[in-house]
Image (cartoon, rainbow, N blue to C red; front, side):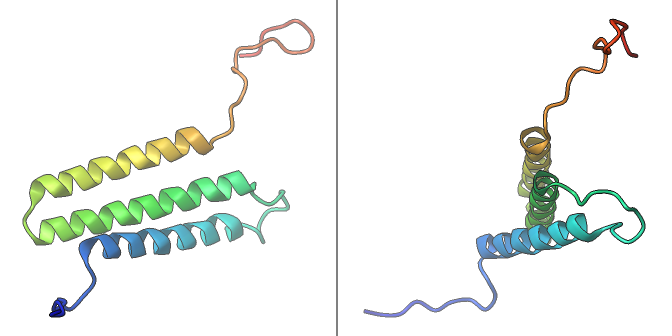
Length: 114
């Protein structure tokens, strides 16, 4: 059985996976530790850290895929990578943001708050 020769460098899928992991870790660290010394507020919630981490990983992976496609002059794939990245960011924002009550609800006195 003949062995396949591998090209130097990682496959495009591996590059994007590595980029996601790097962006995920970097964004999680920033979200968890940013502004901790300046404010006396509570630490950010785990959900907020996860949302920022997923968004950071998604953004970096999409940017890496788009840059690789542009390098190969594959403009359609570059556009698709950007669109997929934007969709991933919106999905993470929607799925990982806690639901809040509508702002135009009544307060405890029966009055509507604006």
